[in-house]
Length: 230
Ligand SMILES: Nc1ccn([C@@H]2O[C@H](COP(=O)(O)OP(=O)(O)OP(=O)(O)O)[C@@H](O)[C@H]2O)c(=O)n1
Ligand SMILES: C[C@](O)(CO)[C@H](O)COP(=O)(O)O
Image 1 (tube, rainbow, N blue to C red):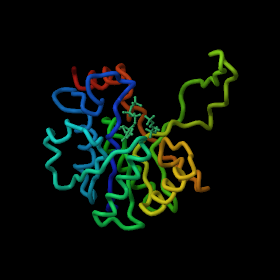
Image 2 (cartoon, rainbow, N blue to C red):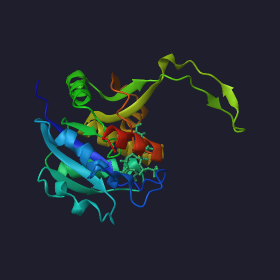
Image 3 (cartoon, protein in one colour):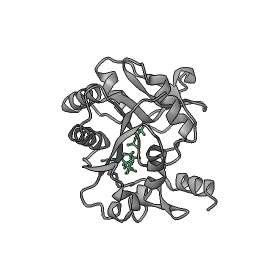
Image 4 (cartoon, rainbow, N blue to C red):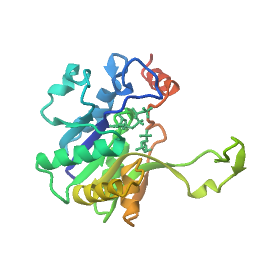
């Protein structure tokens, strides 16, 4: 099955929770930056139409990477929040010729362990979907709702809870419209699916691997480094 798609990689964050000497997407494991691992999964896919990385205006690291010279990769200006960066990336795709109904996959630069099998499953399961969807994993731990005092309020039924991952896959026009409208309404948007939900649509959950982790804190980086024998 061939399904051409575009990719937007939000990579303009500062990585505050990592507390490193540089934004976490530029931390190295086995001689390569996290973002290089992330990009590889898409750059090796035959149906990739083009890819936009959303970068901070003062990012001095990107130009030093070999992939910065890849003609399939274009840059867009990152924004104050992740959603603003994504919106900027979507606008850049239009400048590259992407059309309203083209599929766009949005994937965090900070998720370097995306499996090819997960990417293929997302594309296959959503190819004919009227809305689009996202990779996600059913919650495997008991959940606790916390009170302001830091004590347990209650234990919600976890059977219907999933963790949202990326890539999240939507058609360019509907995604851009939903994201723009939700942000204009002051809605706090932390993933693309929540913008579509805000417009009353119901994205599909595609079960993926639990190790498609977002490298957020130092222990996440230690896990990824161990995966690569470091
Ligand atoms: N204004 C922003 C904020 C985040 N991101 C990107 O969105 C992804 C997921 O965000 P997160 O894990 O929160 O990254 P940071 O914002 O860098 O982390 P922190 O919240 O710890 O500062 C990352 O690839 C990050 O680079 C972005 O493009 N633009
Ligand atoms: C998009 C995301 O990775 C889905 O889980 C998550 O919402 C990003 O949140 P962050 O606070 O920007 O890391």
